[in-house]
Length: 291
Image 1 (cartoon, rainbow, N blue to C red):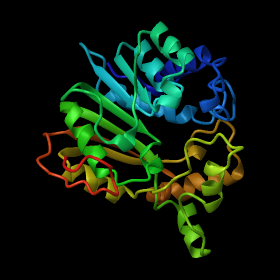
Image 2: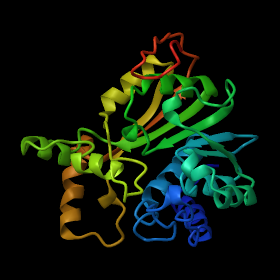
Image 3: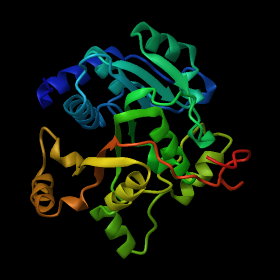
C-alpha cells in the first residue's frame, strides 16, 4: 500500500521534530551551517522531503528488505522518515558533516548506517548492486566536475530494477530565462567564489555550478543504463499554505507551462549495468584513468 501525501507529511514532520534541536554548528569545519531546527532551512525544504518520501514509497514500497542510500543526506530528514516507514537506510555525505561524533551518534540511535563520501573522488565505497533505492536531492547542481563517471558509479551500486531518485533545479525555469534576457549569468556567482576562499568564512559548499534541463537529465541517465519511469516539474509556490495573489497567478501560469517551473524530479529504473567505458582525464581526477 502506497502512502498518500498526508501520511508522508506525518512521517516527515515526525522526523523534523526529532532533529529540531540538532545543530551542525558544533565543529570548526561545520561552522556557518544552518541549525536543523531553524525555520530558515528545513522548514523551507519540507515540501521537498514530503515529495521524496511519497514518491519513494509509491515506486518502491517497504515490502521485504528495501535498501536505501541517500547521497547528500545532510540533516537526514528523508533518511529518518523512510526509516520510520520500514526501510533499511544508509545516509552518506561529505566528511565535514558525517564524521562529526554527534552526527554519527544521532544516526546510530535510529539504526541508520552512515558513510563519509567525497563525490569528487568518483568511485563510491559500496559494493555492486548494494541498494534498491538511491536518492540524490539537490546535489548534482553543486558538482563542479563532469558528473558522468559518478552517475556510472550510481548505476553500478544499484541493483537491477532499483530506483535512482534525482531531484534538482530546472535549468530551463522561467527565472533563469529572465536572467539570461537581462544579460545576467546563472549558476554559481563570482561573489560566491570569493566567499568560499575568504579566511573569515566557513562556507563549504558553493552555489549551483551547473544546472540541467529535463532533457539533459534524460540523456545522461538513458545512456547509462537507466529507464525513465517518471519525470515532473514542481514549484515552491504550489505547496504554500497561505499563497499570495502572485502565487495564485503563478499556479495558473505553470498549469499551462509546467516545464518553466523551478525544480524537477526524475525517477529512473536501472535496467542494466552500463557497458560504457570512460577515459578519465587528469583534469577530472588526479589518479583514476579509466572507469
